[in-house]
Length: 74
Image (tube, rainbow, N blue to C red; front, side, top):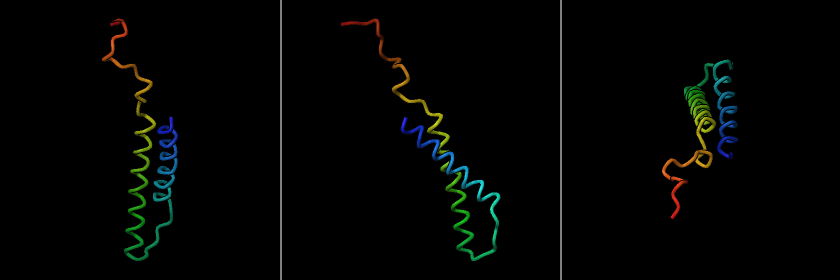
């Protein structure tokens, strides 16, 4: 459950970072400033992808274990 919560946080934050980098005002500043903006956009995309991964990921506790046969008793 904790991973799903953090996943949703990653989706929201990553999405906002990506939207900000797409629709934000671009200024022609120094090269270091432009590199920082590009790095921020890449971080936003990675955060968004990681959030989507953890929201879609199945929890192992919720999945039945296929290797165990409940009909066997010793």
